[in-house]
Image (cartoon, rainbow, N blue to C red):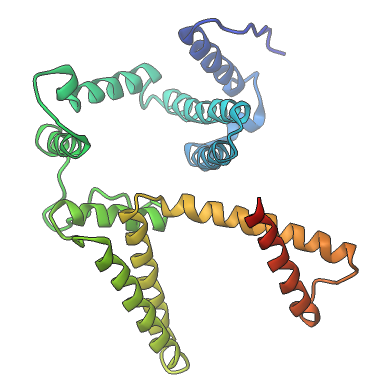
Length: 275
């Protein structure tokens, strides 16, 4: 047993030290076997999960849960940092020093004499510093080399489109984006008519439609992953209500009852609109 007594911190430095100390103890030989087995890849997945849980809490305006989920995000970020420190890769101080220096370097309009009148000029400054000061340029043979291949595919499409926009390859207005979505939808429908002869073409056209939808999301400044996450949550909630009402009315969830189940689905949707 590790002799450790927790006391709530009163300052940010104390709180950060407490969290990192506890994680260090959990990863120690006398600590928790499960925590010792975790790898950066393992914890990274948990970090993504906790981020979406924070988004849920934020969407529900549940401030107490927001605080809890932010704590979980910090826990996972610090756990990853601790694992790297154990491996001799870098220390938490080095990681924090690096990001602090980067923030100051990339905000010369705040910490130096550069000027930026609006957010677009800020982004131009930011990107210029990344490329010309930090040397983070694309490889000559791959314009998208700075886009991580490990990104979830919706985010990868988003980042590819952002890179293209920076060199002027973008629609001048949303009408062009909407027209492209309509065009890709029609091409998908045409491909589906010949799915028996060329199923791979259907897959290609479906991918093109998804890419166009992500482009629309980018144009609207809406994260496609967050939007889909919220839709998933909405469908789960509605379907659970449907299953409950079906059970209460002795209507099994089956193909034979699909018409009446659809009626219940529309009933639930109507109630949501009234609220």
